[in-house]
Length: 285
Image (cartoon, helix red, strand yellow):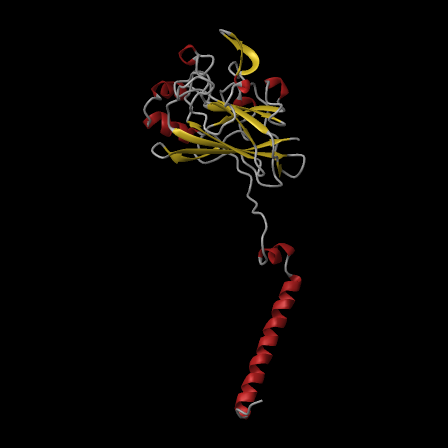
């Protein structure tokens, strides 16, 4: 109890009345607001992006899609150098999937007794696996086998100069976000093909022992801007310059069939600090 006089009491009553009026106006506005707007004012939740596709002229445009908006990535040939137990090299059947140490994130160095290291501009490759049959839900626990050529355009286990090496090949299991990330190098461009990276997807690590067990085989395309930067300025890529000038996504015998809309990676970085390539990979699981 106190007595500060009539003026104090009137000021207090007017202030509280104004506060009640503001509260009532806010509630009335909230009652007519869209649900999405109200949710934005609240707590946690997942961010959603937008679908991004692009042609071969961009260094940061790729075939990635947001949650709830994804497409099945086209199936492509594994090519003549898969090293997955489905074909042979000069010594017979070749299968990198059964090599000790093949499950790894850094694929620049050979394993299982071989010790060579692939030279080139560093690059990380992150694939995000999503289920196109379940609102683009993340696919955890899938095994991804990834491989690509050297900066000179050769494939370990097959090309004569690197026949005894198995680098630039590796397997990883997707995490709770459906992601795998490989540390590798920017591949070169060899005659007749747009710069690319191969990968096979298996339902589990235990099934990743032969290419016959995969649920999807596809390829990642690298954007022209990044290729021009690497081939034009980085040492060791001299053979790629003329090869790249003679090819386009439209003339490539793999990507031209699908326009590469869902295979063109988003690539950021530079020659000095390395590059990061990302791609969302939709499969119907």
